[in-house]
Amino acid sequence: MAVRIIKQYERGVLFRFGRVQRTLEPGFRLIIPVVDVLHRVSLRIVTLPIQSQGIITRDNVSVGVAAVAYFRVIDPVKSVVAIENVSAAIDQIAQTTLRKVVGQHTLDETLSETDRINLDIRENLDVITLAWGVEVTLVELKDIQLPDSMKRAMAKQAEAEREKRAKIINAEGEHLAAAALGEASDVMMAHPLALQLRNLQSLVEIGVDKNTTVVFPSPIMTTIAELNAFIAREAAAGVPVAPG
Image 1 (tube, helix red, strand yellow):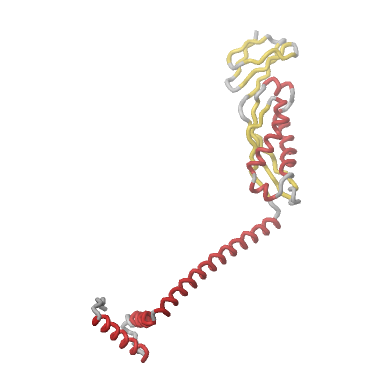
Image 2: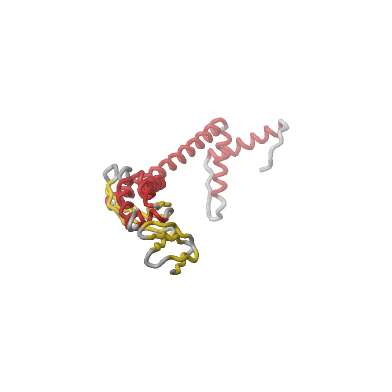
């Protein structure tokens, strides 16, 4: 008898006289030399890079797309009997499936709907690989290369969108400012004295600087006289007037 040890992450496919005898679980195993042949199969997930493919999208844009696939053996016997080299076979079928699926989408869909494309590729691969005792657990597009002309066009489009948003914001600000000025104008027209008071306030603000000489024009002096008369009338009528 011969001793064989099968690791925790492995399964053993035992052939006797060229026929599959059984699947061996992890641990200490005895086989008959010459008569028995043991194939160890790893059940761990395998990472498989899918090299960049030149693909024509549905809207006739040439792109380079690279991806990565993850697969694992779920049936040790099939993985030994049905296929000679699992990794090489999946690599080839993954490349053709990547070209097929991405070619069914437009460029915008390829850039914005990667999750759906990843799922479509995985489902297409599983249809084939499950017959080999292998399950593709995940596919991810990891690099999408665009032509230089397309990159420049997209950059111009993004710049145009930014300028459009800036113009809209400026227009909204000007609209709000115009509305506020209109309301203020209505108030001033309804209360002429308020307009004169605003002029006086502006002159006072100018006169804060000690080096500034303020010359009051004749209309301003008239306004001051009118203001004093207004305060006198309010006082005579018994209306309290706030001190200036």
